[in-house]
Structure formats: structure tokens, C-alpha cells
Amino acid sequence: MKIWEKYLERKRTLYHAKYQTPQQLFDGACDIVIKCFAVCGGERMKPGYTRRNARLIFLVTDLILYLFVNLYSIAIVWGSLMDVVFCFVTLGIAIQGLAKIEAFTCPELNDLHLYNVARFKAPPRFREVDEALFHTATMCMVFIRIFAVAFSIVAIAIYSYAILMPLIEHELSLAFGFYLPFVDYRTPVGFAINWVYQFVQVLEGCIGLMACDSCLLVLIMNATGQMDVIIVYLKQLTVLIDNNHAGQNDDEIADIIKEIVLKHLEHTKYMTDMDKLLKKQFFINFGCMIFELVASLAIVVRVPWYPGMAICLICTNQLFINCALGTFLSSKNEKLVEEIYNVNWYGLTTKHQKTLQQILLTSQHPVVLSDGFSPIDLFNFVEIYKKIYSYLMVLQKVS
Image 1 (tube, rainbow, N blue to C red):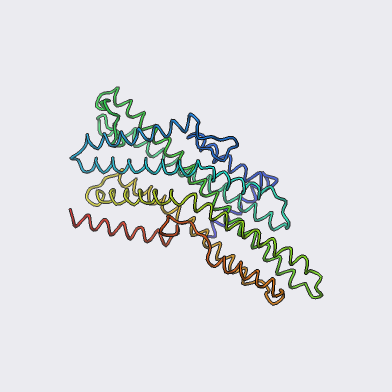
Image 2 (tube, one colour):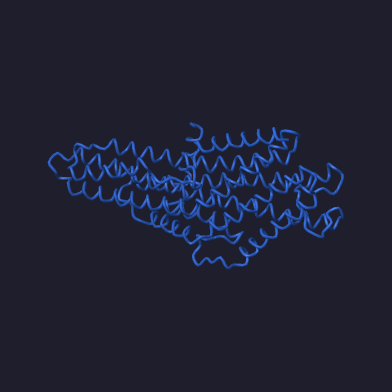
């Protein structure tokens, strides 16, 4: 943890020297996400965006074709358990892709983004607010760059496997178990066509996943940043109360409480809108990843199937990242509740105490991200793996 804090502090110092305002740093982080989405035609955060663009139409058409290609491949390899499972697993990836496209190209996503941009543009009332905004922007930029490195490594590993596999096996062998219909991959020309087709799928998948995960990160980091700003206001409120011996700060106290109420209402609406936007996507993606993990592990426990091991690792990382972000959001809310408790309540009027009490009650029962059944957090991550283990044991007994 100390190493991470030192690294984050070093990055914050570096960005302070490079960017004059938090807005510039945040815009830089968003530009990276928009460029990743632009490859797939999903740059909803860019002004003037429309779903009717050639890149997105190509991607959706390609994913639908990919579904039929997988079904065709399942029919071709039927009888070989490992190949059938491989096709079913990659079929789940296509369904995940369509769910992500639907969620991350919605107009509601742009509404959330515009609200975040407006927060960074607004002049800060306190210096600490500016620092909180800079911290939020720094977290966005740092994690986006980490995601870029991680997904680049995944892409390089997959391409290396695709190139080395035919050389090691001394035959025309594709990295994935799906093939284009009516194109014989056992011939040099057919192998080249199928290899290029799989190359395109991997490229779209890695860039698209990075864009979606980075966008989710930006949304959640801004949600925590909103709470950071409220915490700053609560600390300033305590300072004013402690120095309000003759009632000279009454007007400013009332004004700050009003600001806290407005900012908390905005935060609650932001969380409600984000949960509504992502709920269906979480449900479909988590369901597909659970299926992919169970199917892959069912083979891996029997034979050393390296593609299956890679799928298990990637799916586990995807589940962990989503759940860890949800837990980070919850921990920040707990910090907000603690800060509300720390306010000097005895120095407030009864009216202001009741107002702050309403904020406390709302904070103790916050809106959380969910898949429609369970909150997205690390506790749910553990529960998911318990279910996966149970399903795997049932399959083992049946077989």
C-alpha cells in the first residue's frame, strides 16, 4: 500500500507540473478513453456523436457474424468436447460485446460525462476542492494508463500464441476454435483468411474492453470524487462551527449546509443514473463470464488446456476489476458517513441538525451498483466464485 501511495504521489506531482488545472488533466484522461472508443465507433462522450456511424455499424455486423461463425464452428467440431467448449466460450464473449455496446453508447452515458465535465469547470469554493478534483483526475489518468499497459500485454500474448502455435505444432493451426464458413483453414489461403479474421476479433476485443473498463473507471472515480468534495465541505463546516462563538458565521454555515445538500442530491442522482445505465450490462456480462469460467475450468481440471487457462485468468480479472471498483465506491461512502459523524453537531441549530441528519440517513443507505440481484463488490466476487465451484463440482459428479 505504501508503494502505491508513493507512486500515486509521484504521479500527482508530475501531473501538477504538466497540467495547470484539474480540468486539463481530466480532459486528457477522457481523450484517451474517447480515442479507444473511436476505434470501435462508440465515442459517445464526443460532441455530435451518433450510433449511425460506419465503425459501429461494422462492429455490430461483425459481432453478429461472429455469433453465426461460432454456431457454425460448433456444428463442425461437434464431438470434440474441448473444441465445442472453446466455441461456446468465445460465443459468450460476443454476447458480452453486444451488451457493452448497448450500455456505453447510450445517450445517458453522455449526460453523466457532461455532469463530470461541469464539475471540473466550476470554480472551486475552497482550495481543498481543487485538490480533490486534481486527485480524481489523477486517479483516472493513472488507472487508464495501467489498463492500457495491461490490455496491450494481453493482446501481445494472444498474438504471440497465434503466431507461435503453427510453428511449434508444424501444421496450420489457429489460435481460436472458430472458423469462417466455406473457407478451409487447412489450406494456406484459407488459413491466412481465418488468421486475419481472428486477428481483427482480438484487436476489436482488446481495444473495446479497455475502452469500456476505462469508461467505467472514470464514472466511478468521479462518483468517489463527488464524495471527496462533500467531505471537504463538511470539514469546512466544522471549522466554521468551532469558530462561531458570537454567531458571526451563521450565514456562511447555512450556505455551506445548503451546498452540501445540493451536492449530495446530485451525487445520489448520479449514482441512480449510473446504476440504471450499467445494471443490464453487469447482469449479462457477469452471467457470461460465470458460464465461461465454469466451462473452461471443467476442461482445465482434466487436461492442461492453455487457452482455457488464459480465459479463466482474463474472466477472473474482469470480475475482480468490476467488483473492486464497486468496493472502492462503498469504502468512500463509509468515509463520508464517518465525516458526517465528525461534524460538531452541538454547534448547529435544530433545523440544521435535522438537515444533516437526513443526509446521514441517506448516506447510510446509499445507491450502489448492482447486476439487478447483488451489489457489485468484492463480497459478491467471493460469492460468484463459490457458485462457480459448486457448478464445477456438479459437472464433475455428472461426468
